Length: 77
Image 1 (cartoon, rainbow, N blue to C red):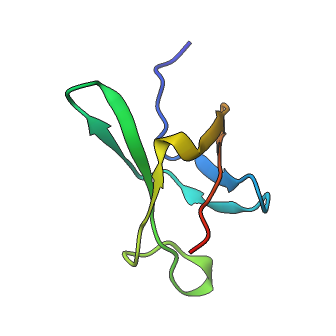
Image 2: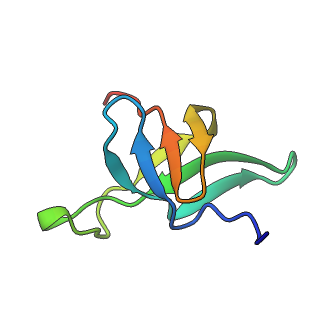
């Protein structure tokens, strides 16, 4: 089995069942060694990923992790 890596996994919103992006980065609490949040890059024109607004998803909003997908409960903004 390979190493555990969340980067580049597609993220699906459990409420809408839509792909909301992919994990680009993680925020880690170095004192506890636990993941605090994951970052999903913003989307640009025509659904393309851009350097626009990123979405930070708290780790406690992650519902499940699979081989290809991460299921999250997105907060309403």
